Length: 422
Image (cartoon, rainbow, N blue to C red; front, side):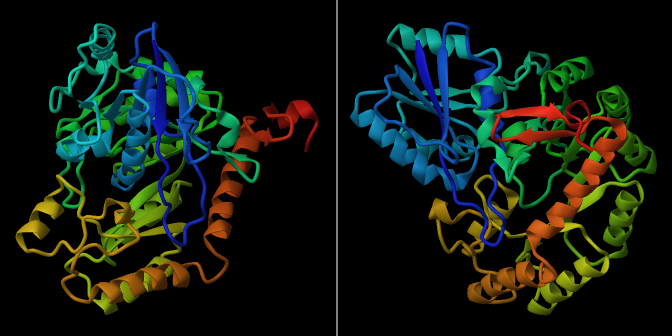
């Protein structure tokens, strides 16, 4: 059986430098396919999709709501050619009923241990319209090493810098953040992977720089300490979502290669100031994820927030506009209050106002989004700030002998020390 796995293109944030990380969902999904499936992969963000390539089944991996319009176009084109289309991924779980109108098959939930049944049904001519495993999580031990060999790795670099490889060490999240859909998608129970399986996957990744894409790295202190201790010998350098704000954990994370973290900054309190300082005191950089448009924010609050970010010397800031994604507590609230202005999923990119803010007009919030990006980066821009973070990690890699430079001409990575480069 031949399967074409497709990751639809999507619009990047306005003002943000365009770069492309290797997608995680497709490679995790590919690892759950039976050996009999001959899978080819196309990431439309860096590759051109050939509709004429022969295949038996098209599988669309859709992570983001804003990918849906393009995914529907792709599905329509293949279905017109008589090729069945299956959908799966986070956005599909959030928009299941709508997606069914565009699909021959919709898979809802996590695929570990379940794809053999789907493949058998396809081969027997009885593919189901819906396979619904929502909230029926498979044993976490079934999560294997992602099949990154389906990626064309040479396409994931920016100006010669190899992009980070994505990996997850757990699923689920016990926190209940109001803009977030994670509780609906992955459940509110923290499900850590066995540490030996995590380490085996990390060792299999040739890239020295990783992004741990767990929903939160702040859910279980003892498990984190054990994980970081096991990671130390690998000398990998990594980025993650928020770390547990605990000095023992922060030191262990730094020793295990923590490079920088994405830290939500939602106010100008001393709690945020101290948290950022502790991270930086441990040598861990901070990229703030800044949500604009909450009900508590006025225009002056947003302007003051931008000043605060510069005052605490945040390394990098990613400003986004609060967006009412389906199945989030925020969406439920705004639907009750009749504040949703648009259901054009292509605009759900977190840089466009699709709801009625409480303390300002939609146009004013959009203006403040641009103000935040431009003001924070007025001293040199996002690229320069990110460049400083890369300089820090390169220095650390040179010190511990793990620095690798990506050679785009020879399409390989080499050890600077071995090459005689100083």
